[in-house]
Image (tube, rainbow over all chains, first blue to last red; front, side, top):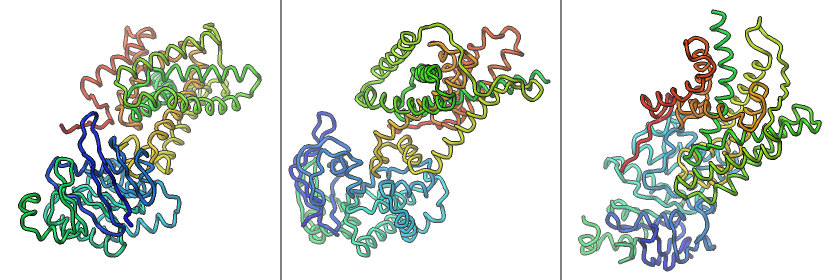
Length: 236
Length: 291
C-alpha cells in the first residue's frame, strides 16, 4: 500500500506545462528519490505535490484525494515540504522556527518533547536556540529546515535538494541524519537531488526524470549499479 | 526650557496617535505589500460609530470597546469581501480599490452623519496636569496608546497566533508549508489594523473634532511615521510615529516661519528626506532580491 500515489500528474506555471503526466508511488516508511538534471522538473514535482503550483491529475495521500486542496491543508494532513532554499524564517530565532513547525498541533507536551528530539538530532540548533535563524550557515539552516519539518510530525517529508550549496563534509552529515530518521523513526521521504550518489545510497526506490517526464524507475540499488544509466542520466 | 519640554510632551501625545496609524499601515503593508490609503477613513468611520453609540446613551467605555470590536469585524470583512479576490491582481487594481474604499467611507460618513463638525467626548477630562505641562486628555491619550502598543507587543511576541502572523508577513510560502492558514492571518491583520485605527480615531477626535475629513492629516503623519521608521518594521513605525509628533511640534514652535499652517509640510518633507537618504527607513530592512 503506497502512502502517496500520483496518476497523470501535470503541472503548470501559467500557461506553460512543466510536468507531463507523471505516474509514481511512494512507499510508506521508505525513501523515494527523484533524480535528474537542472530543470528536469524535480522541484516542480514537489511543488505540485504540496499544491504550490497549478496541477491536473490525481494525487492520493494516505487514502484520500488531495488534488485541489490548499497547501496549508496538505501540510496539516501530514506532508512536510522542506523547500528549495530551505524556507527559513530568517529574522526569527531558531526556537521560533521550530515552534512554527508545530503550528498546526495542540499537544503542548508532545511539542516540547519533539523540540528536545530535534535538538537531539541537531545539537548545534540547541546551542543557537535564541539566535536569529538567518545568521546561521547554509548547513545549519538545512538542519533547521529538516527540524522544522520534523516538528510537524509528518507522514511524508518532501526534501528539495538537501545537499544544495553545502560543503562535502556537511552533505555527509545531513545524509547521516536523514538515514537515522529513516532507520530509527521510519519517516517516509521523497527526496529530490542532483547529488545522485548521495541520494541513491539512501533511497529504496528511484525515478529518473527528464524534461517533465519519468524516463526510468526502479530499485535505487540497481539504478545506482547500472553503468549505462549512470553515464547517461546521472553524470558520474 | 519649559516651552521646549511642554512641546516635546505635547508632541509625544499626538505622536502616539501617529504611531498607532503608522502601525496599522505597516501591518497591512506587511500582509499585502500595499499602502492602505483608506486607513484613516476607516478610523474616522469607527469614530463616528463610537459617537453614535454614545449618542444612543451608551457609557463611554462601553462604546469604546464595542467600537473596537465592530471595527475588528469590519476590517476582517473588508479583507474577505474586497481584497481576498484581488490577491493576485496588479498594483493598480489595489490602488483603485483603496481609493474607492476611501471615497465610500468618506461620503458614507458624510451622508449618514453630515459634515457638521461635532465634539467628541473624552473620558479623561481636560484639566491641566503637572503644572500645566500636559492636559489630562493628552495624558490619557498617551497612556491608552502605550497600553495598546504593549498589548500588541505581547501578542506578537508571546502568542501562537502572533507568531503565525509574523511568519505570514515574513515568508508566506514557508508559512503555508507548515500549515498556517495564511489567508486568515491576513484577514486577522486587517481586523487588527482597523481596531488600532479605531482607538487612534477615538483618542484624537476630542482634539481635532469629529467630521468626515478629520483623519486626512493624521493619516499623512501616520504615513510619515511609517516611512521614517521603515515600512517593514512595526517597531520602527511606532518610533517613527512618536518622532514625527515631536518634530512636528518643535518645528511649529521653534522654526520661524513654520507655525501652525506649515506643520503638515513637515510630514511631507520628512517623507522625502527619509526616502532620499535612507529609503528603507531608520529601522526597516533592505530587501535584496536575487535575479
